[in-house]
Amino acid sequence: VLQALACNSSATLKTETEPESGSKTEIALLEFLQKYGEDYNKLRAKWPTSNKFPFSSKRKRMSIVIDGEGENGKPRMHIKGASEIILYSCSHFYDFAQDQIVPMTESLRAQIEKEIEKMADQALRTICFAYKDLNGNEDMKAKDDKDVYEVEKSGFTLLGILGIRDILRKEVKDAVAKCKTAGITVRMVTGDNNITARAIARECGIID
Image (tube, rainbow, N blue to C red; front, side, top):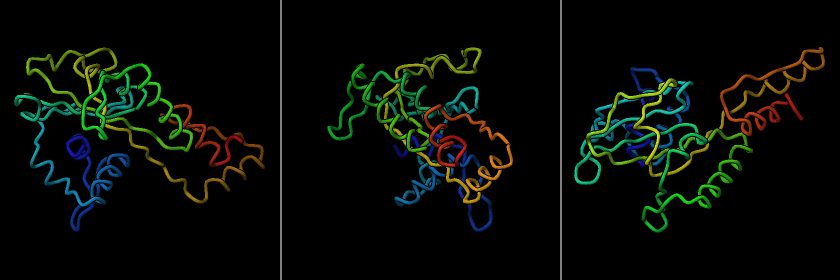
């Protein structure tokens, strides 16, 4: 989990001399680590990455490879991104309660999907993070027309799901109400999934 959150990221937090950089989502994940006493800079120094596949709205995922961290010293790949995409790249699930890896059955996947829906219905944007140990001879360049690399598509072990809330500015709901009173129809454009989008739209008064 530490590798997944600290290393599979291009963000940095604000320091005395430098401003924060990166997306608000990635900054939130680093602040989450910091809250629990983890220094992401030290973790990145401990686990340097050799391959990086950056996030884009087209790909809806990002991946990195850490050499020597997999089974028998093989490379390990971490991936994170939109839950509806990453979940279907996973063939296994890491059961923290039992400390073991279990197969991703259809019933388990359905159970996880229900939890994702519950989070999305609370206006939480959900992010799945997962990993897999590589053989070391995978094709790291082959990709499809959506810029998704073949090595990113299957065989992952799901580590967890994070829910991130985009806090509405306090003036938004009033502004939407004034627009409606003036006869203006308000529309929201978002990359979030439908359930999260509807929950946010309800929260700010775009729909009831």
